[in-house]
Image (cartoon, rainbow, N blue to C red; front, top):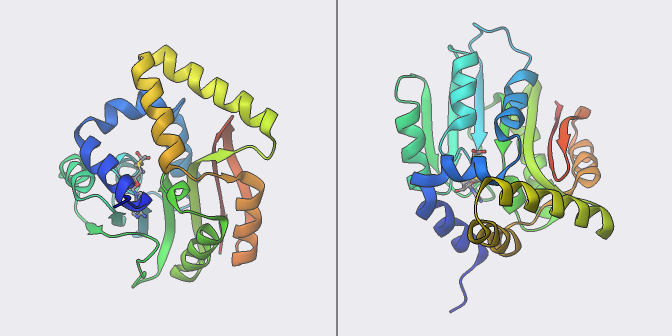
Length: 230
Ligand SMILES: C[S@@+](CC[C@H](N)C(=O)[O-])C[C@H]1O[C@@H](n2cnc3c(N)ncnc32)[C@H](O)[C@@H]1O
Protein backbone atom coordinates (compact mmCIF):
# COMPACT_ATOMS: atom_id res chain seq x y z
CA UNK A 1 0.00 0.00 0.00
CA UNK A 2 1.21 3.52 -0.80
CA UNK A 3 2.43 5.36 2.29
CA UNK A 4 0.46 8.49 3.11
CA UNK A 5 2.46 11.71 3.18
CA UNK A 6 1.70 12.18 6.89
CA UNK A 7 3.13 8.71 7.56
CA UNK A 8 6.20 9.60 5.50
CA UNK A 9 6.68 12.85 7.47
CA UNK A 10 6.23 10.95 10.73
CA UNK A 11 8.82 8.30 9.78
CA UNK A 12 11.27 10.93 8.53
CA UNK A 13 11.33 12.91 11.80
CA UNK A 14 10.88 10.00 14.17
CA UNK A 15 13.81 8.28 12.44
CA UNK A 16 16.05 11.38 12.45
CA UNK A 17 15.26 12.68 15.94
CA UNK A 18 18.71 11.95 17.35
CA UNK A 19 20.55 13.64 14.47
CA UNK A 20 18.05 16.41 13.71
CA UNK A 21 19.97 19.21 15.45
CA UNK A 22 23.11 18.50 13.47
CA UNK A 23 21.21 18.11 10.18
CA UNK A 24 19.07 21.25 10.46
CA UNK A 25 22.15 23.49 10.66
CA UNK A 26 23.36 21.95 7.41
CA UNK A 27 19.97 22.25 5.71
CA UNK A 28 18.56 25.64 6.71
CA UNK A 29 20.63 28.78 6.12
CA UNK A 30 20.66 31.13 9.14
CA UNK A 31 18.57 28.66 11.15
CA UNK A 32 19.59 30.13 14.52
CA UNK A 33 18.93 33.68 13.39
CA UNK A 34 15.57 32.67 11.92
CA UNK A 35 14.28 30.98 15.07
CA UNK A 36 15.78 33.80 17.13
CA UNK A 37 13.45 36.24 15.34
CA UNK A 38 10.40 34.32 16.61
CA UNK A 39 11.40 34.97 20.21
CA UNK A 40 12.56 38.54 19.57
CA UNK A 41 9.16 39.49 18.18
CA UNK A 42 7.24 38.24 21.23
CA UNK A 43 6.13 41.42 22.99
CA UNK A 44 5.86 40.19 26.58
CA UNK A 45 7.72 41.55 29.62
CA UNK A 46 10.43 39.03 30.53
CA UNK A 47 8.97 37.97 33.87
CA UNK A 48 5.32 37.80 32.77
CA UNK A 49 3.40 34.54 33.19
CA UNK A 50 2.37 33.90 29.63
CA UNK A 51 1.16 30.73 27.96
CA UNK A 52 2.43 29.72 24.53
CA UNK A 53 2.09 26.80 22.15
CA UNK A 54 4.99 25.59 19.98
CA UNK A 55 3.55 23.75 16.97
CA UNK A 56 5.88 21.09 15.57
CA UNK A 57 8.22 21.46 18.54
CA UNK A 58 10.71 19.00 17.09
CA UNK A 59 13.77 18.74 19.31
CA UNK A 60 12.69 21.82 21.26
CA UNK A 61 14.99 24.53 19.89
CA UNK A 62 12.30 27.21 19.73
CA UNK A 63 10.82 26.13 23.07
CA UNK A 64 14.27 26.28 24.64
CA UNK A 65 14.73 29.86 23.44
CA UNK A 66 11.26 30.81 24.67
CA UNK A 67 11.81 29.36 28.15
CA UNK A 68 15.21 31.07 28.33
CA UNK A 69 13.69 34.45 27.38
CA UNK A 70 10.48 34.08 29.41
CA UNK A 71 11.32 31.93 32.44
CA UNK A 72 7.79 32.15 33.92
CA UNK A 73 6.07 31.13 30.72
CA UNK A 74 3.95 28.02 30.42
CA UNK A 75 4.62 26.12 27.23
CA UNK A 76 2.58 23.54 25.32
CA UNK A 77 4.77 21.55 22.92
CA UNK A 78 2.89 19.73 20.17
CA UNK A 79 4.50 17.35 17.69
CA UNK A 80 3.61 14.33 15.59
CA UNK A 81 6.77 12.45 16.50
CA UNK A 82 7.27 10.92 19.96
CA UNK A 83 11.03 10.62 19.41
CA UNK A 84 11.38 14.31 18.50
CA UNK A 85 9.38 15.13 21.62
CA UNK A 86 11.59 12.95 23.79
CA UNK A 87 14.72 14.80 22.54
CA UNK A 88 12.87 18.06 23.35
CA UNK A 89 12.05 16.75 26.83
CA UNK A 90 15.74 16.06 27.50
CA UNK A 91 16.75 19.48 26.19
CA UNK A 92 14.14 21.25 28.33
CA UNK A 93 14.59 19.07 31.42
CA UNK A 94 15.84 21.97 33.54
CA UNK A 95 12.65 24.00 32.94
CA UNK A 96 9.27 23.59 34.63
CA UNK A 97 5.91 24.46 33.11
CA UNK A 98 6.33 22.53 29.87
CA UNK A 99 3.68 20.12 28.60
CA UNK A 100 4.28 17.66 25.73
CA UNK A 101 1.48 16.53 23.45
CA UNK A 102 1.95 14.03 20.66
CA UNK A 103 -0.60 14.94 17.98
CA UNK A 104 -1.18 15.74 14.33
CA UNK A 105 -1.73 19.48 14.43
CA UNK A 106 -4.30 19.44 11.65
CA UNK A 107 -6.57 17.23 13.77
CA UNK A 108 -5.62 18.74 17.15
CA UNK A 109 -8.18 20.85 19.01
CA UNK A 110 -6.75 23.55 21.25
CA UNK A 111 -8.28 23.28 24.71
CA UNK A 112 -7.10 26.64 26.12
CA UNK A 113 -6.33 30.22 25.15
CA UNK A 114 -2.74 31.29 24.43
CA UNK A 115 -0.78 34.53 24.56
CA UNK A 116 1.16 33.29 21.54
CA UNK A 117 1.20 30.38 19.12
CA UNK A 118 4.52 29.88 17.36
CA UNK A 119 5.78 27.37 14.85
CA UNK A 120 8.94 26.69 12.90
CA UNK A 121 9.47 24.61 9.75
CA UNK A 122 6.30 22.60 10.33
CA UNK A 123 3.19 24.15 8.81
CA UNK A 124 4.54 23.68 5.27
CA UNK A 125 3.76 20.01 5.84
CA UNK A 126 0.03 20.81 5.68
CA UNK A 127 -1.08 19.76 2.20
CA UNK A 128 -2.92 22.72 0.65
CA UNK A 129 -3.42 26.47 1.13
CA UNK A 130 -6.92 25.58 2.37
CA UNK A 131 -5.42 23.29 5.05
CA UNK A 132 -3.04 26.07 6.08
CA UNK A 133 -5.93 28.54 6.23
CA UNK A 134 -7.94 26.14 8.40
CA UNK A 135 -4.98 26.06 10.77
CA UNK A 136 -4.67 29.88 10.76
CA UNK A 137 -8.36 30.15 11.71
CA UNK A 138 -7.90 27.57 14.44
CA UNK A 139 -4.86 29.41 15.81
CA UNK A 140 -6.78 32.70 15.74
CA UNK A 141 -9.60 31.19 17.80
CA UNK A 142 -7.12 29.74 20.30
CA UNK A 143 -5.38 33.06 20.96
CA UNK A 144 -6.29 35.60 23.59
CA UNK A 145 -7.11 39.09 22.32
CA UNK A 146 -3.77 40.73 21.52
CA UNK A 147 -2.15 37.28 21.18
CA UNK A 148 0.60 36.68 18.60
CA UNK A 149 0.90 34.06 15.89
CA UNK A 150 4.44 33.72 14.50
CA UNK A 151 5.56 31.20 11.91
CA UNK A 152 9.09 30.59 10.63
CA UNK A 153 8.86 28.48 7.53
CA UNK A 154 9.95 27.45 4.09
CA UNK A 155 8.03 29.26 1.37
CA UNK A 156 7.76 29.07 -2.39
CA UNK A 157 8.23 31.95 -4.87
CA UNK A 158 5.19 32.99 -6.93
CA UNK A 159 7.19 32.64 -10.15
CA UNK A 160 9.26 29.75 -11.53
CA UNK A 161 12.34 31.84 -12.31
CA UNK A 162 12.33 33.31 -8.81
CA UNK A 163 11.84 29.86 -7.35
CA UNK A 164 14.79 28.55 -9.39
CA UNK A 165 16.99 31.25 -7.85
CA UNK A 166 15.73 30.38 -4.37
CA UNK A 167 16.33 26.67 -4.87
CA UNK A 168 19.79 27.21 -6.36
CA UNK A 169 20.73 29.39 -3.40
CA UNK A 170 19.38 26.79 -0.96
CA UNK A 171 21.11 23.87 -2.71
CA UNK A 172 24.33 25.89 -2.76
CA UNK A 173 24.13 26.38 1.00
CA UNK A 174 23.49 22.67 1.66
CA UNK A 175 26.32 21.59 -0.64
CA UNK A 176 28.72 23.97 1.07
CA UNK A 177 27.81 22.72 4.54
CA UNK A 178 27.56 18.97 3.78
CA UNK A 179 27.95 16.38 1.04
CA UNK A 180 26.34 15.74 -2.35
CA UNK A 181 24.51 12.72 -0.88
CA UNK A 182 23.10 14.79 1.97
CA UNK A 183 21.98 17.54 -0.44
CA UNK A 184 20.34 14.98 -2.74
CA UNK A 185 18.53 13.35 0.21
CA UNK A 186 17.25 16.75 1.48
CA UNK A 187 15.94 17.63 -1.98
CA UNK A 188 14.24 14.25 -2.33
CA UNK A 189 12.51 14.71 1.03
CA UNK A 190 11.59 18.31 0.13
CA UNK A 191 9.84 17.13 -3.04
CA UNK A 192 8.09 14.23 -1.33
CA UNK A 193 7.08 15.80 1.98
CA UNK A 194 7.01 19.60 1.78
CA UNK A 195 4.16 21.73 0.48
CA UNK A 196 5.36 25.31 1.01
CA UNK A 197 3.01 28.20 0.25
CA UNK A 198 3.57 31.53 -1.46
CA UNK A 199 4.32 34.10 1.23
CA UNK A 200 1.71 36.62 0.06
CA UNK A 201 -0.93 33.86 0.14
CA UNK A 202 0.04 33.10 3.71
CA UNK A 203 -0.25 36.77 4.68
CA UNK A 204 -3.62 36.99 2.96
CA UNK A 205 -4.75 33.82 4.72
CA UNK A 206 -3.76 35.30 8.09
CA UNK A 207 -5.73 38.48 7.35
CA UNK A 208 -8.78 36.47 6.27
CA UNK A 209 -8.51 34.45 9.47
CA UNK A 210 -8.89 37.73 11.39
CA UNK A 211 -5.30 38.69 12.23
CA UNK A 212 -4.26 42.35 12.20
CA UNK A 213 -0.78 43.85 11.89
CA UNK A 214 0.15 40.96 9.59
CA UNK A 215 3.86 41.37 8.86
CA UNK A 216 6.99 39.68 7.52
CA UNK A 217 9.61 39.90 10.24
CA UNK A 218 12.49 38.26 8.35
CA UNK A 219 13.13 36.70 4.96
CA UNK A 220 16.03 34.92 3.27
CA UNK A 221 15.22 33.57 -0.21
CA UNK A 222 12.81 30.65 0.44
CA UNK A 223 12.67 31.03 4.22
CA UNK A 224 10.58 33.59 6.09
CA UNK A 225 9.28 34.52 9.52
CA UNK A 226 5.87 36.16 9.54
CA UNK A 227 2.76 36.48 11.62
CA UNK A 228 0.04 38.66 13.02
CA UNK A 229 -1.82 39.79 16.10
CA UNK A 230 -5.35 38.86 17.22
C1 LIG B 1 11.64 20.39 10.42
S1 LIG B 1 11.05 19.89 11.99
C2 LIG B 1 11.08 21.45 12.85
C3 LIG B 1 11.26 21.29 14.34
C4 LIG B 1 11.40 22.62 15.10
N1 LIG B 1 10.18 23.39 15.02
C5 LIG B 1 12.56 23.41 14.59
O1 LIG B 1 12.37 24.38 13.82
O2 LIG B 1 13.69 23.05 14.94
C6 LIG B 1 9.33 19.65 11.70
C7 LIG B 1 8.60 19.06 12.88
O3 LIG B 1 7.20 19.13 12.64
C8 LIG B 1 6.61 17.91 13.04
N2 LIG B 1 5.38 17.76 12.26
C9 LIG B 1 5.25 17.60 10.93
N3 LIG B 1 3.96 17.51 10.58
C10 LIG B 1 3.25 17.63 11.73
C11 LIG B 1 1.85 17.60 12.03
N4 LIG B 1 0.93 17.42 11.08
N5 LIG B 1 1.49 17.74 13.33
C12 LIG B 1 2.42 17.90 14.31
N6 LIG B 1 3.74 17.94 14.08
C13 LIG B 1 4.15 17.81 12.80
C14 LIG B 1 7.65 16.86 12.77
O4 LIG B 1 7.44 15.70 13.53
C15 LIG B 1 8.93 17.59 13.15
O5 LIG B 1 9.27 17.41 14.49
